[in-house]
Structures are given as structure tokens and as C-alpha cells.
Length: 445
Image (tube, one colour):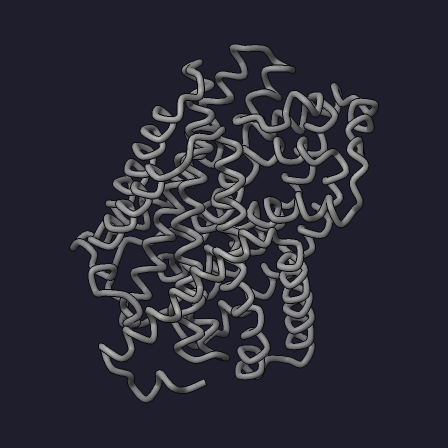
């Protein structure tokens, strides 16, 4: 996966990659998901069991595929082993599209906490303007390169960890079991309906576990650091998600949290008061912004590597002499994100966040599905022990079945637009191949 011919650049350490991976997951999920759980009902914590199993399975498969994959290109390199260059393009393209959209959602969640700090009402024009500013700030923050991005993640991840640590330590003493049970299935939904509403956002909350693979070329000793980063970060985040959201459901009434633009702020406001909640909101805002820096970095890496493989124009692969990710490609992508923000309809932050997350989640499943399917071929070619091949194959099989299940629960409108996005990408790939030519290796499946 790691090219020996890659140009030297400042690289992050294994610990920084682990923290970046954890921050990518926490920064995109925990700060909004309590509102979703409250809207569905406290019984939605059951969905954590299913989603947690999926996350652990995928983390183990990604860790092994990252070690044994013989192709570079992140997720595309894994897919290439089984599906050739066309599969590699499809994986990188769908993952890249998902990141362009998901990063907008992360920026909007950061804005929601900034508005709480400033005590400013949710005005659509103001929200759009602040979202655009935060996106551009995150883009420029990647200019110094991978090492700097890793250092930012190592510092600002505490903006998420500290509030959650306080919550996990104080929460049990104020936990109200009656409040928790009053929110249990109060809408008389069936378990499949609960899963349909809760699982997509929960699955999205774990997106980022694969970012260690995507950023493998930006870390020292990737064959050792990358699998450790995936497994450690995913396990820790799964525990944090389950404990924190379960506690929150017994601390704050469901009606108070449901649809909130800043649910963690609401939680701390109810248990610690206005001043402390604003301090927590500051921490979470900084952590969200730094998470977006990591995600913009990952987005740039996906398009940069894809450009080097010939999938996208060369401008996406250009870097400065400092080795940062601030070439023309990331600027183009940020302009696209800016236009998309300006086209968003007037609605609450939570409503917009939920809609973007659903689209991003399903689009991302395309790339994950290709990687999980390719795992069988990767492990066969690696000639590892039968025990490891069976274990990886079993976990890949569970992941594939789970993702098919998520597809079956998806809203038809979301699935339609995700399919259109995929078909547009495939058409683009065919046209680009016809214009740029195809090497013999491109046809190898």
C-alpha cells in the first residue's frame, strides 16, 4: 500500500495517527448523536450493540488488509486486488464524495456549538457564513503538512475526551433510571423501525476508523502503526459512545434533547449550569474544528492519491515543496463545499445535519463494501495462516451482511440519489479512460 517512491514529507507518529483516527470518529459523531437517540427513543441504545459489532469487524478487516494489500491508494488499493482499476476508482470516488459531504456536516456541528458559546440564535445566513469560514480555516490549517495535522489532533482531541470523561465520571451519580425507562419505546416503534432510524447515524459515527488506512503513507512505520491505530481507536471509541449516550438518556428528558442543534451543551447545561456548559461548548467547538482539519486532510489524501493513479486531473495531486496537502486540489474541493453550503435549504441545523449524514453514510457504504469483499482475495494472496484467513473472512462476511441490511433500511430517496452519484462517477471513469488511454494493467481483474 505504501509506495517506496513517494516523495519525502513530514510524517506523523503512530500515536498521532491513533489519535487522529479516534478524533475523526468522535468529532463526527458524538457531538450530535444524543439528539438522534432522543428523537428515536432510549431503546435505540440497542443499535449500539449491532453497530459496535460491525465497527469491530470492519476495523479488524481493515487492519489486516492494510498490512497485506499490495496496492497503494487507501481503500482503492484494497478494492483493486479483487476488482481491478475500475474497482479501485469506484472505491476512491465514492469515498471521496462521501467525505466532501460529511465534512460539511462536521463543520455545521461545530457551528452549532459556536452559536451556543456566543448565545446567538440560529439564523440560516449566519450558519452558512460560519460553516464556510470553518471549512476554509480547516483547509488552510493543512498547509504545513501531515506532521502538523497529527500534532493538532493529539492536542485538540482532549476537547472531546475531557467533557466525555467528566460526563462518564459524574453521570452515574445523577443517572435517573425512571427517566431512562420513560423514554424507552414511548412511541411504540418496532425494533426494525428503531434500527432504521438509529443505525445510519450510528454507523456514520464510526466512519473514520478507515482513515488510518487512507493516511498510511503519511505516518512513520505504516505497517506497524496503521493496524494498531485502527484497532485501538475503534475499541476505545465504541466504549465511549455506548457509555456516554446511555448516561445522557438518563440525565436529560428526551423532549429536551430531541432535535437539539447542540445536545452535549444541553446535557452539561442541565447538570452543571450555564457557565460550565459554555466552557464545555468551547472545548467541543475546538475539537470539532480540529476533527474537520483531520477530515479535510483525509479528503485531500484520497483525491491526491487518486490523481497520482490517473483517476482525476493532475491538479488534485499537486503539493507544495513543504509537502503539505494545500495544492490546487484541496482548494478546488473546498470551493465545491462552499457552493454546496450556499445551496442548502433553510432548515434547522439538526435537520440539515441528519440529511447530509444519511447521504454521506450510504455513499460511503459503496467503498466499504468493495473493501470488505476484496478482503477474501487479499488474504488469499498474502498466504497467511489458515486461522487468520478464516477469521478475517468471517469478519468481512459479517460486515458485508450488515451493510446489505443497512441498504435494506435506507430511505428510497436517499438511495436513489446515492445511486445517481455512483452512476455519474462510473460514466466519468469511462470517459476519462477513453481520453487518457488504458494500460494493460487497467484491465486486470
